[in-house]
Image (tube, rainbow, N blue to C red; front, side, top):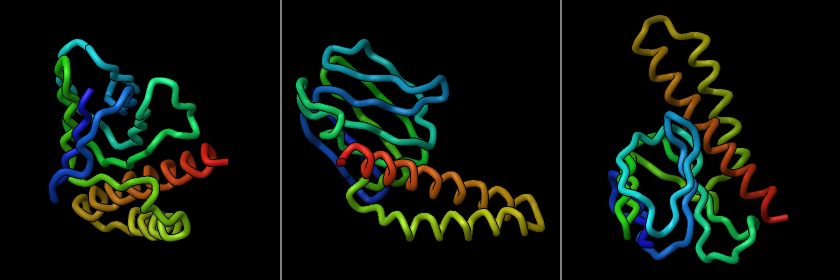
Length: 140
């Protein structure tokens, strides 16, 4: 099946894959070739991509997303998001420091706008850390 991960900056991924595991409001779903048509909201979380049927979990490719829209047809899976970070590109130490700054901003927020922005940053960096951890654990 064709998997397309599209961000505000353009197409991040456009390739044939066997399985994609996606975070939705109802929990994680796995999409395989021939999946029933579906439109759903993606929530902040990790996308896991299995390129070939026989690939072990240590071959999974991970992406951190902050939410978006999922569209599944018989042959194409499109995920539309504001941004997506590949597990390969995430520096764990930088994400950990950014999460600490976001938590501090959340705790020091003086109004609803600051609080909402801080919550979004906390979610973003927590997901990035999760993806970095998944990648590290599965590469061992």
